[in-house]
Amino acid sequence: MRTIALLAALFLGLAWAKCDHPFYPVQEGWVWTYRSSPSGETHTISTSGVTNTGFTQRYAFKSFSFESQWRCDAKGLAQPEYVQPGSVQGLQMNFKTKKASGVVIPPTLSLGTTWTYSYEVSGEAKRQTLTIRMNQSVSVTNKIVGQESVSVPAGKFSAFKVESTLTQQGTMSIGGREQPLNLNVKTTSWYAQGVGLVKSVSENNTTELVSLKR
Image 1 (cartoon, one colour):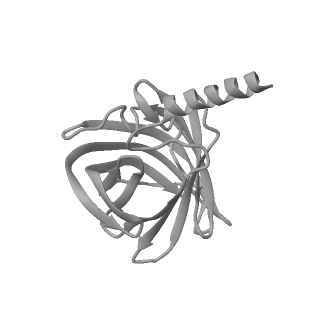
Image 2 (tube, one colour):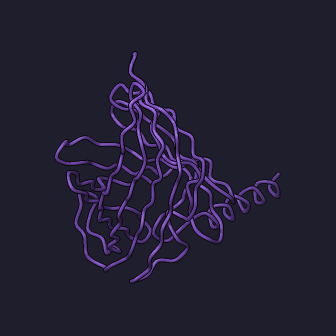
Image 3 (tube, helix red, strand yellow):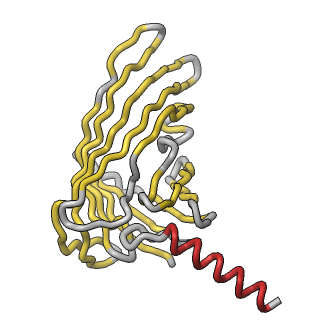
């Protein structure tokens, strides 16, 4: 029995080691709590189901929650499916990922590191009698532009500063009328070793780490 327990512990340790990342920890049961401003709302991200090839993250907000599946390999940490909540502000979302490429987190991070990941998705959003059909190409480019000291409610961290640009191109159809759906969103994020994302700033929102439960 003791031998079986030791083998199980060794297997789990190897699974964590394969998926774990210095700047994006993958540890069973860890929970990150974030607060957004100016809204003041908090949400959590928890990790579960860690294996040697992937894991699950659950995003829990005040009025909705959803899960994201991750894949781990030598290329880094990837999300094979485009992350989309099932319901937002009364809209029931149903999207399918037709194509995915690249990794969200590359295997190593250093000053000047650049990477891109992208998706092709299609689907619809419904609310009562309203149906919005969409086809989108989403691409995110990233670059580490510095290393800074960042203070957030969870503490003070030395973190890599990452500048990202999300480009979305596509169409949406409402009542048979099609129109372009194009977005360009710039975000600056900070990742600390052994902690992960500690702060993220976009045009109208700032998200900061409040706590990390290990």
